Amino acid sequence: ETGVTQTPRHLVMGMTNKKSLKCEQHLGHNAMYWYKQSAKKPLELMFVYNFKEQTENNSVPSRFSPECPNSSHLFLHLHTLQPEDSALYLCASSQDTEYNYGYTFGSGTRLTVV
Amino acid sequence: SQQGEEDPQALSIQEGENATMNCSYKTSINNLQWYRQNSGRGLVHLILIRSNEREKHSGRLRVTLDTSKKSSSLLITASRAADTASYFCAFSSDSNYQLIWGAGTKLIIKP
Image (tube, rainbow over all chains, first blue to last red; front, side):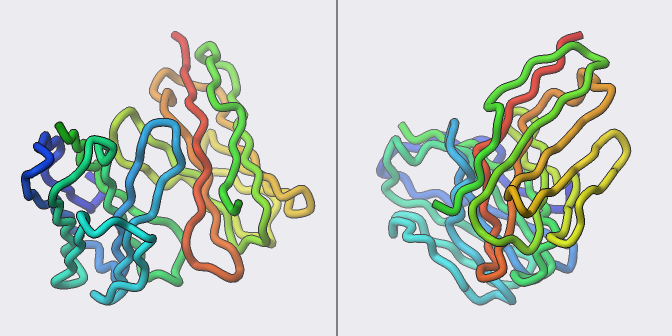
């Protein structure tokens, strides 16, 4: 266990479904991140929250909607996804966004859109 | 682009041999980090080297940084089957706190 917990580990959803991914950390970190990892591509940063405020949205389609109710929890709400959204979704945390001395990652959610 | 580039893309060696992976970048960096990812799981932070450092060690890992060539290497000595994983470099620049990632090197250690 890294201290960052992601649920569920696997998710299969239809294109018309609504689902949510959850990330939780109790490391005392103030920054949390959502990344998308597709095969043979670099990690794609999706969203960044620092002290519960969204500081980055890397041109992510609106069918992905993040939520950060507090510094320990981060959600990614999914709605009307496309098959090309199938990927490993990784959550990470760090002390804060300017403390770039190492991220702690969760184990990821493997998402398959059918 | 700002993306890091890693080579080789894949590396297969015998257990006990040393493995070397390289990372190149195009911008000025604040620090460079290496991560390991076991198949289908999250990334684990291995080592960080600051822009004013040239070499760092952690157990069987040795990282070098050459800022004049804008490159870094990760050496794993006396490899073990458990070292089989993908290895990623990531760096933050002076102007942007975001980590920029390479595409990774897939390392296979054959028993």
